[in-house]
Structures are given as structure tokens and as C-alpha cells.
Length: 99
Image (cartoon, rainbow, N blue to C red; front, side):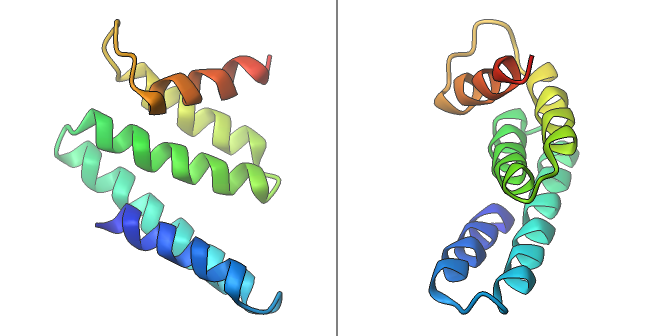
């Protein structure tokens, strides 16, 4: 639920004036952080990865590449070997492109 709210805030950014965008991005970041925290507390690795990927995309867009890569690496480290989900593939592509 938190992740979806974050996505909605980011979608709203595209509809709003440039002056309103930072506040909506901040709300989205709060939602994604809450989603990661909730997923970790429930040991829901796939949901943690999805929320972490959303957060990483936001941070990369805001120039926080190092934080984004750290968050992705942490989320990917919890995934079991052999997973081939689209989220994991994308996260690994982002991590590999950073090297």
C-alpha cells in the first residue's frame, strides 16, 4: 500500500507545477521508505525489492546515485539465487551499469 501511494505521488508530480514537485517527491520518498521498512519487518523480500527499486529510481533522478545503489544492493542481497523476477533483473542491471 505504501509503495502504491508513492507511485501515485510521483505520477502527480507530472501533473503539477515545478514548484509543487519537490513536496510530492518527498512524499513519494516517505512512502517508499515506509514500504521497504514494512516489507523487511514481514520478511517479504519481493515487496522489499519492488519498493527499493522505486526508491532507487527516485534517488537516481534526484542525483543520489550512491544511496540508490546501496539500497538496491541491500535489497538484492536478500533475494534467493535463481530468482528471475523483472524487478531483480532491473535492479541488477542498474547495479552492473554503475561499475
